[in-house]
Image (cartoon, rainbow, N blue to C red; front, side, top):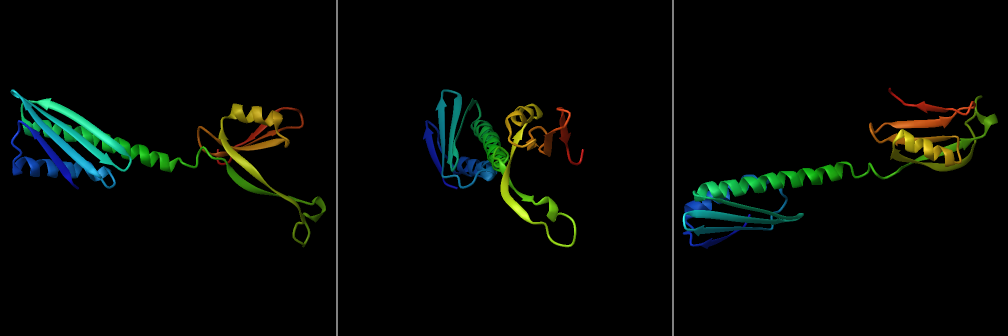
Length: 181
């Protein structure tokens, strides 16, 4: 971790440097490879200002804090950066975890000959295709069933994430198969 210090009307002592390095080590634990950290300390009369920029792999985090005590100002700015870093890390992890949720899954479907089912021999496959399973609500599935070429639609329930089958019954109504419910 490399920290660039800029002091404007502030004497940058080793104590201030070690204090800020120690606190920044805790704040950057949520980040991967902080490329550049810049801490600008400024004194205007009795007011002290800390302006902190952390440039890392996924963007830039910034915090500015003002107060009377230099250590307190540095601490507060680093706390803001830590909060932003934690939020950024959580956002990145959530994106990775739900990365495949919006994408349709493909399931293989084999059509077998009716006379080959049962008996001692293996069923004879007539046709092989794939079935696209997309996340949607029950209402969306009902709309898609109206235009579907099959009398059923397999979908992932957008609310619960479970696989469901919506089918047309012989009497014209819809049937819903929800496994495990």
